Structures are given as structure tokens and as C-alpha cells.
Length: 509
Image (cartoon, rainbow, N blue to C red; front, side):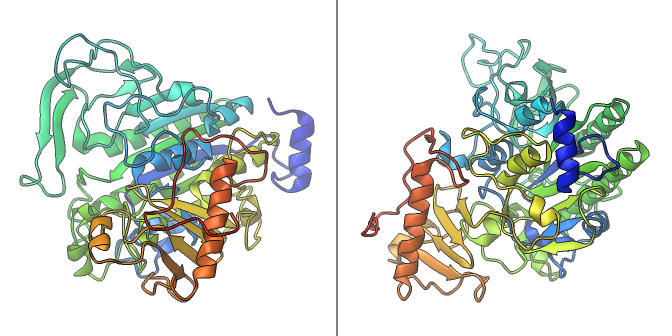
């Protein structure tokens, strides 16, 4: 628990205002496959109307150089909750499925654990996608191996959440059932799915679905649950942490009236508008509940926009989900992992700020550790740096490097304006893919000066090889130390390799 002495220290340090005697509530909203260009706070040329997010940004701080730790879903979620780069875990590439076992061990420190120690009530509502352990059955076949009448084990409750309500994988991954803190709310009563030919936007894989699970209603349902939680906890004197990972605008892209058709562009743009409207409702609920002033709200995305959003159609309306950055979801290029990131906290953040401070979603852990006044430990938040300096108007935090990771397991190393991609191509889905890059005999590494080449078009590795070597050695150190933040070395969960074929460790290592 936080002592009176620690609270006094926070007040004196300026982290809490003198008229506040309690720690801030925290709401962390994580959109799914939303590009940095899809909201107006991070893209002035955005053609999708996002007035509520714009208002949130006007009343808080917008990070213009913020990144997910990975270019895809599962690993980014790992990074958000642990404050640790995902590639240090057993998941070397790709994502989990809707039937995968739990990824984060109970002993791994998380933001949830951290805030529980500070006296918070913690709740997860939404898309988990970090695996949990379904009840096992003796039948044969994928679904007959799951006994939906048995409790789910090793869910978010072992990772620092008092309670949770959500679905296991992405919303296009069966099984489609709600789980409320280990208990399935309704057994599957049918098989359901939509193929791409039937609906290129709203498709989802066929599988068992609960009687109370309705695909089109999932997004509003989760926001309703989130707002009900806020109202419930506002009646108590205990601070709360709501982790609200959304299933949208990831497939199935299923906007409902009055948002369906509202953008006059395509269903993806409609769905983004729906998210924006729900965020407006959530922020209004905080005010109605009387907890707005001392609630820290984050809004961000787990990676860049997916091709499922239909880039060609959006381009017809002058809209670019990557806002001029190269690539998209899954890629090592900026469009894969540079994401919208807005924070609002009336008591703790001066409104109307825009910052170019380098940030990563792993930074939630250290931010909350500093706000709650807890000591730094070697195991916990190994790749996390507090955002409080940026909140207070500083032009940077203590973060000076950034390691990014693609769906295929490719790495990039960033320091200042220099970015080294340890891949011949995108490392993901955009051209050139790695196989094609090898066939074309492209260099196995790419070095970009983001200050002068934000689109990552001019590979400088041949003329700036010494800079590339410097970044390789820096990455090697952060890999071997098991951390990028200050502290004693700790082990990774697996042997981590990052050099592509044909590249040797520079001399001096």
C-alpha cells in the first residue's frame, strides 16, 4: 500500500497536485489495428472524423513518436502489461490463437501486479489475446478437446487483475464465448462464421459461439461494460485500473448504425468513427461519475493499420492510415509500429501538449511505478521508461533507444534519428517480403535517417556502415543485458538471435 509519506513525496515532486490526496485512476484503451494516420491528433490530414479523440488530445498530451513494441497483436499486449520487450519471452514471432495456452507466467511482474500493490482495484475488459487455459475434454478434434462447462484457468487473474471479462483471441478467432473471471457466461449453442467472399470486411473464422455472444455487438458491449465498471468503482475510495483492449477496428469490421455508412468512405472508416464515439461516451462517463479530474486516460493502438482496411479504397478519399510512413501492420517499417498515443489527466497533464519524445507502450509500467512511488526492481519493467517528464512538459524522457519487432521476428534498432532494420525487406506483409528481398539480392540490412527520410526509402547502410555497426552493438548489449532500462542484468526467457543471414557481429564485440 502507498504510505502517507510517499503521497507527500509525490505532491512535493509535482506528480500529484496538493489538493489531491489519492492516486489517479487509470484507464488504458488499446485499439486493435488502428493506424497512426487514422485519427486527427496524430494526422492533420486524416479524412476520418475523430472529434472525441481530438478533444481528448486538446485536453492532454499527444505523442508523435510513440511505438508499439511489436507490429502485431499478442506481442504488443505482452509489452504493455509487463513493461518488457515481447521478444524476450518464449514468443519469437507471430501471434497466439483463440485456443492458445497462457503466455505470461503468474510470477512475471505486470502493471496489474504493480497497481494492486499500490492499493488499486484492477480490471481487464476486452480482447485478451495472451492465451488462457481452456478446460480440457477427452474428445477428438479441435473443439471437442475443449470442455466449455469447465472453468478457464490462468487467465488475466494470474497477471494482476482482480477481475476480467473478455474473449481469448482476436474477434476473427474462435471460440466466441465470454469469460468472466474464469467462468464462461454462456455455452456455445451453434457454429458460426463468415467467409471473405460473403463479406470482405466483416469476415471471421467459423467456430463455436456462445448464446450471448453477438459479433456486431461486441465493441459497444465492451464499452458498456467499461463504463459500468467506472460507475461502480467511482462509488468507492479505492483507485482503479481499467485495461480496455478493444477488438476494433481489426476484422471483423462490423460498424453498426448510426455509424454504418457514416464516413461515406468504407466500413473501416465507419468503424473508426464508432470507436471515436464510444471514447466520447467513456470520457463523459468519467465526468458524470465525478472522477474525471484525477483519472489518467490513455488511448493508443497495438500496431499499424491492417491491409484489411482496404488501403486502395481509402486512398480514393485521400486518406492514408500510415500518414506517410512506410509499411503497415506486421512490418518493421514505421507504419507497422508507430502508433497514435494520447494521454489525458486534468490533475497531472497540462492540456494541449504535443511531444516528439520517443515513447513505447512498454512505458506504462515505469510511468505507473513512478506515480505510485514504488521502488524499482530488476525484474519488472525491464524495457520501460517513465513518461512523467513528457507529461510535465520536458522535450524527452530518459528513453534514448527503441527496439521494434515484426511479425516474422525481424528486429530494428533506433537511436535518435537513426534506425537500423535487420532485414532485407519489410519483415512482414508489405513489399518486399523477406523471401522476395532475398531473391532480389537486396542488402540484408537497411539503415535510415528518419529526420530526412521519414518514408524509409533511401537505404544508407552501404555508405554509413559504421553507424549500422554501432547500432548492432547497442542492440546486442540490450539483448544480452535482458533489459534496456538501468539495472542489473537479468535473463531472457529464450536465446535471442537478431542478425539476419549474411551479417556478422561487428569487430570489437
